Length: 368
Image (cartoon, rainbow, N blue to C red; front, side, top):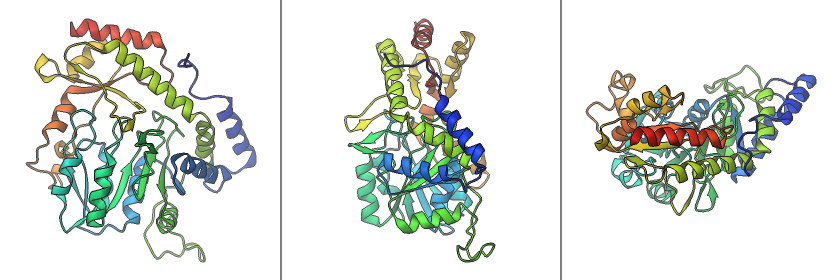
């Protein structure tokens, strides 16, 4: 039996936090930061890990270290979190969007090459809700046009693409360790890379670009994106259980699928033959012809004391970007449908089987 009702944190986290506090090393100078970086990078199959304060900072750092110039473009999905596009905009670049694939909800790789221009510098595939992007076509296109690939792997700790861990395929990858991620440090993130130069630049950028030979002397702009030793201590303890957490996620998803299979009007998550889906969130998509959207379903479930979360709203529909003159008149129909018809069900690691059964019974009642 999978221990789905065990606490997210154990005595191990408390033990390492106490060790950290007792040592006096609570800032980024403490040894747990490097231990967490090395452990997570090794688990993912990448040479270097650079811990930062959150996943958004990881994306910002990735864009910084490729030296994106004003007006240069990064291709990404419309259906993603706003952090992806904002990382590009903050560096005066231009996010260029492609639509989502209707079954995995990841970026549709068939649309990528048509969006390349002489200004394109990178492609940013976003592995969505636990399922990998089809990376082989992305890597082939990037090789053809000499582009960077920055994997947003925030939602796919432990997921695999053709036997390789997500986050080990592009030149750079970015992870989040926010409280709802498969492993967490409360807040936190990491940049992974096999490239020695990129790793060196990322370590400098997260630390205000102090010169190693002369502190408080700066020749490049940087940020204070450091992870604390306290956060990293929690991360080290969490890494000891990451395979257990992935197993719980997959077990819960299998139970959801078993109980929901056959309900008309609901599309369930998929797992492509080449993928290992870690089901970070168990999302469902309502058929647009049933007369109910995700907002209406969320209200029905809330009335039964069941919380849900909506899917992302596409970047091309965000008012903040329209105010910047971006994406006006652009349409991405799959992203638009997913945003209106999709939501994710309770997906936490501490879910009990009877809670999943309650959710599924409520859905059956509402949908029939």
